[in-house]
Length: 143
Image 1 (cartoon, helix red, strand yellow):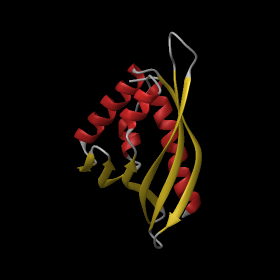
Image 2 (tube, helix red, strand yellow; image 1 turned 90 degrees about the vertical axis):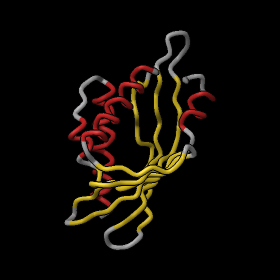
Image 3 (cartoon, helix red, strand yellow; image 1 turned 60 degrees about the vertical axis):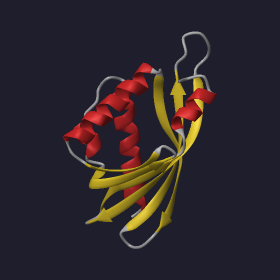
């Protein structure tokens, strides 16, 4: 399962970066997610379905990332915590690069913890836990 989960996040990284370049295929990105999911952050816990509303939300999110100058999202490390033969938590360390017009680019490191289920050898994200993205962006003068 470890190789398949690593490939899942390598695909995620490629899709995300293509969308930052204006070549988004949210249906392709949505294929990395389970039919239903949960997300948790300091702003609260949300549940959702992998449907048209989710894809629209992802499109708006990537539009926002482009608008604030996000140039690239790069995986620094992936560490897996197995739960059972079908589930794990993937601890993904990311670096986001932001273009600034008045100063050098800014790199921000952050972690997201993803809940992953692998059925029939195909892993899907069914949840994630993240920190306070807005506070981190403000700290670095992005938001």
